[in-house]
Length: 165
Image (cartoon, rainbow, N blue to C red; front, side, top):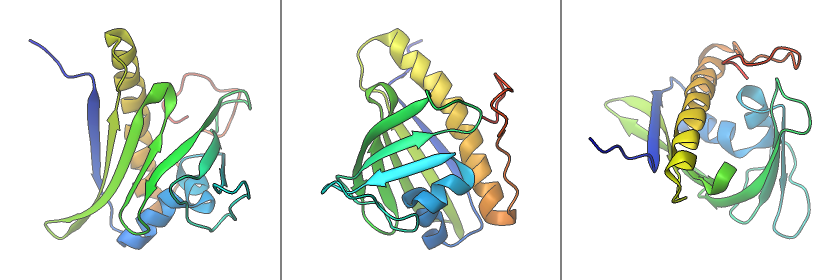
């Protein structure tokens, strides 16, 4: 049986307005509340975005996580940000992540799709498994933070190999 390692989808219903979910993904302040230790964005003209300023296509980012030292850094580009329900960014290993906020059966759904365009099957499998696990946790944390305020992330850099970092 053949398996498609080139893409995965993670979906979660969140009892929050679509605008709040979008802000949680599209601002430094939002991302640092549930996902990242540091989320810095720079506009296409080279000026930094403020903590509450929404990202735009062409911005670049510099991200750091709790549970990791400053050598664990991701620096890539925002590919799409429509201002209300969809954004897309380049990610580790050449992956592309697309986030969409949808209404479905009276619920607000946050949907993440990660594409692994590389041709090496071992590389695809690595990103499929590792990123899939990570996004599962972080999207659960997004729901937790937006619905009740509890942040589940490990913030102790000395604790290694935990699912919450």
